[in-house]
Structure formats: structure tokens, C-alpha cells
Image (cartoon, rainbow, N blue to C red; front, side, top):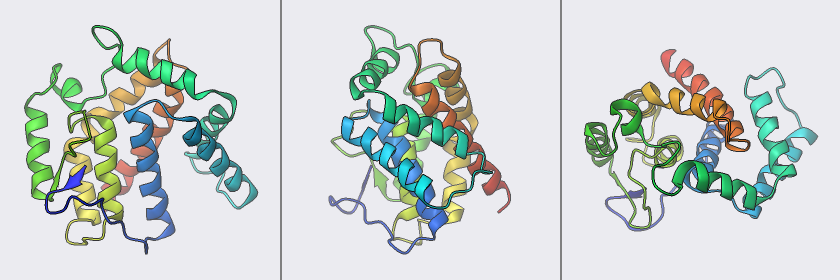
Length: 214
């Protein structure tokens, strides 16, 4: 995503709380994993980050701990080529895709429907529009994760605040994302992205509960 007013990359707030920084980072990671199969470099970063956490303090009681450690272990034990092949087969494929990553599909059964129009209106109101470099429509889960990252970590506090995060999450993500993540976890052909679905599903559940408490 890119801002309407500027062609430069989004500026992110460097004074975030540790909790918000972790949330923004996780949304950013999910955006990368859902946009395309990860590179060797990204898998190495995931594995190294997991090792760094293991060497420091971590809250093993967190319900995110298990899904995160499963993903870290898979990043250590697998090749980028295997991830990319699985992504290609499941989310792109030849002919009809096996699994769709678009909100409109889960809300209406079709692509490019009214939910996408409403989403574009919402993005315009907060000063965002799709980058020319992005080939997916705005209701792709990767794009939506990137918007959430911006709403957490962007410097414009008139837009990037908890109120906007809750509004955007509830209106454009919450009602359908659980079905997507459940599909990923239960799909028989998925090995790598079933773990991404488990992590994303757990994280989004936590996010929804937190927003309900506001």
C-alpha cells in the first residue's frame, strides 16, 4: 500500500511500545508470507529471530508461543523452494485456485464484489491506495495485514491509532479471515502454510479480543 499524498515509502513510528512493535512486526511478517512464497533470506530471519527469543525471555504461557515456535522450526527445517512450490500450487495454480486469499470471495463467493468497493472507499478515507507495484487487489490478506501494520506503526497519529485499528479490523478483516485460516490449517495438501494459518488465526483471535475490550 502507498499513501495518496506521497510516493515515498510509509514512515513508521520508531517510538512504539514493545507490544505494538511486536504486533506491527507480526502483521508485516504475515503480509510477506501471504504475498508470495518466502525467500531463503526470510526463512533464515524467522529462524534467527526464534533463536534470539529462545536465548532471552519469553512468555511460554502465551497462546501464540506454540504456533510461533512451530513456524520457527519449519523455517529451520525446510527449503524456500518447497514453500514457493506450495504457495504456487495452493494460491495461484493453473486454472482455478485451490484456496483464495481475498476477502470478497469469503464474503460473497465471488471476487471483486461489493466488499472490495467498500474497502477501497475506507482506504481512500485514511489516505491509502494500492501501490502500482502490487498486483493483488486490496482485499488480499497480505494487503490487509500491511494496512494493519501501518495503522499500528504509522507516524500520522490522526489515522494510526487504536480507534482506526479496531474499526478497520472489524469492518474489513474479522468476519471472514477465520474461515481462511481454518481452511489453511485443515487443507490436506498444505504443510508449510498450515502453520502460517495457525499462527495468523491465533494472532487475529487475540487481536479481536483485545479490540473488544476497548
